[in-house]
Amino acid sequence: ESIMRFALLLALCQEQAAALVGSPLSGKMPASFLRPSEKNVILYDGVCNMCNRWVNFVIDNDPDCIFCFASMQSRAGREILDAIGRSDDLSSFVLVDDEGFWTQSTAALRVAAGLSPAVLRTAGVALQPIPYFLRDGLYRVVADNRYSILGRVADGDTPSCQLKYDYATLRERMLDLDG
Figure 1 (tube, helix red, strand yellow):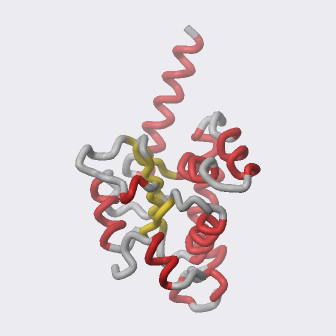
Figure 2 (spheres, one colour; figure 1 turned 90 degrees about the vertical axis):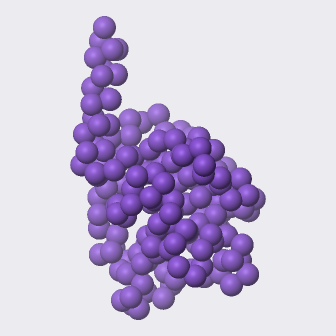
């Protein structure tokens, strides 16, 4: 019975977290959605320097190219956000994989689990059993302050945060460079 109470408490916490964010934190993708070339898609805030640094980090540690990217502000990014019911929510990056879509710390850990070297994969897998509402608290602190940490692209103060790859690499990894 105590296990049932704990499970109910966890479910209520997830509902409250989704209500605070205002959109679903995870779920299934619509049946009509096809992942490009069966790659996992990462949607990120394209004006956030820290988010651009994250994209560089993932590309650096993804030698098998299992991830592709779209800025949430791009046409492709907006279409995916619309499909998952997060149209106006740029509060978290989003991972779309073969099981559905994920946000916040769950998305970050699922990405880490797919990266090299082994220490990133191990951390990504080992930390997932920690209840997401505990993990997401730390994620929210960072996400809510991401512009003050490394600024925005428009600030022009942090050129090291720009996407550092040549056009050919970005064209291969980005879903929509034009939007």
